[in-house]
Amino acid sequence: MKPVRPFYLNLMQIRLPIGGWVSILHRVTGAGLSLAIPVVLYVLMLSLRSAEDFADVAAFLSGGFGLLIVIAVVWAVLHHLLAGLRHLGFDIGWGEAKERARLTAWATLFAALGLTGIFALGVLS
Image (cartoon, rainbow, N blue to C red; front, side, top):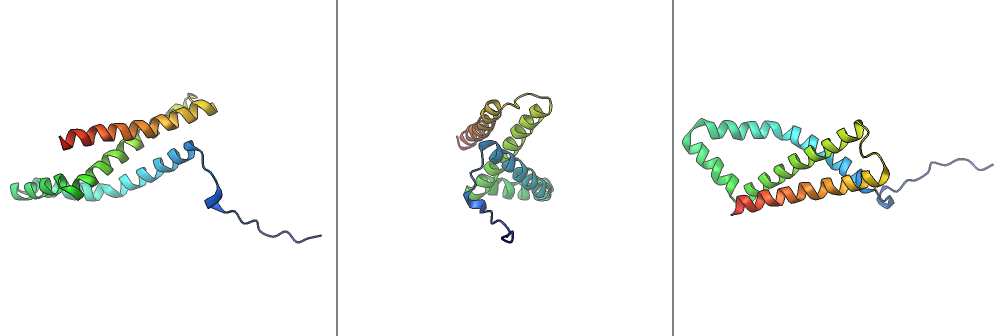
C-alpha cells in the first residue's frame, strides 16, 4: 500500500466564480474602509482646524492623487454597500438560486463601477 502524501492544491489554477470574487471584494472593502476610518477622521480634523488647513485639504483632494483616493473610497463604499445588500438578500432567501446569485453578483460589480463612474464624471465636470 502506498503512503498517502499531502495533496498540493495550486490556488492559481482554481477558477473562482463571480460570486466568490464579489464576496472577497466585499471583505476587502470592509477591511479597507475600517482601516481608513482614522485617516478620514484626521483629514476631517485638519479641514475643520482653520481656513488655511481646509484650503490645503481641498487642494489635495481635488488634485490628481487625492482625486484618485476619493474615487477609490467612493467605489469601496458603493461596492461594500451593494454587496452587503446582496448578502442580506441571501439571508432572507432571495437570490439563492445559482443563476440569480450569478446575476446579482454581476449586477453588484457593474452597479458599483457605474455609480463610481457617474460620481467621477460629476466631480471632474
